[in-house]
Image (tube, rainbow, N blue to C red; front, side, top):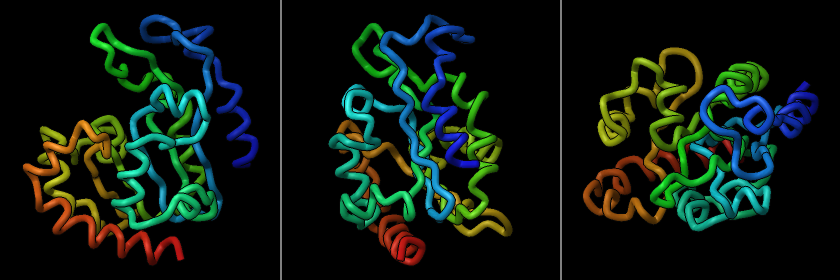
Length: 203
C-alpha cells in the first residue's frame, strides 16, 4: 500500500498541469517525502527548498544540520526510513516570491495527499511539526495565535490523552537564530525531552 502511494506521489503533476491555486510550479515537479510502515517518528516541515529540490533528499541543507542536532541523531539515522518518516506540507519546491524568499507550500498537496498519507501510517507515535503550516494541519483549532505561542505551549500537545504526541517546533533555518537567542527555554526545556523521546522511539 505504501509503495503504491509513494509511487503516486512521485508521479504527481497537479501543480504543473492543473493547479488549483495560482500559477503552475516554476520548475519540473520533484515530490520529496519519505513514507514508512515502521517509523514511529514523522517529521512534518513546510516544503523543499531549491537544494532539496535539486537533490531529492529532504533536509539536505543547513536547516537539516540544525534539525539533526536538535534530534540528537546522526545523518545515517536521520535518513533511515525504518526510523523516520518525512512528510512536508508541500512535496515540491514552490518557487520564490518577489523578494526572493520561498513561497508557502502548495495547498494542492495537503488536499490531495496528506489525509491518505497519515491514514497509511497508523504506527506513528511522535509528530514533529515544523513551522506554521504543519502546525495548522496537525493541530487545527488547538494551534495558538502565533508560532512562538504554539511552541511555548508544547506540553499541551506532547502528552495527549489519545493519538500520537505532537511537538511543535520552530523552523531550524539559520534565519531563526535570533528567535532561538530570544527564547532560551526552547533549548533548555524542549530539546532534552525531544532527544530522549527520539532515542526511545528510534532505538
